[in-house]
Length: 172
Image (cartoon, rainbow, N blue to C red):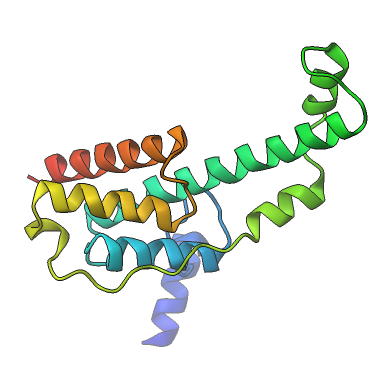
């Protein structure tokens, strides 16, 4: 039987028999994707696996997390350029910023930890009220590092709400 599977894999091509990689749309470190998955399961009450709500949650939160890291890295680069004496509104500052983040800044950003997720909610995502779902979405964005007073926090919540709504609609 094993020999037959091996031959089938050779005939079908090695990609067809390769182990499936975890869903990771932003190519974050596995530890961060594990934490994002835990936020989807524990904070939002979405059962794990390959269901559309869980995939939408992971996609939305990983995208928001990566965007926050990118913004933090860009801000660190700006501060580094300003520390060199470059002034806002000048071509020199813009050129310094466009040379991009150093490898050390980018690597440090992707090692950033995410706060541990909350305890498992009393109700699943599908049985919670709209108000409860919205509160959980806010908690999820806070748990991946967004400050609730920032506009980026609101964008994280809105993106999560939109993607989960689309996943709910496509499931029905």
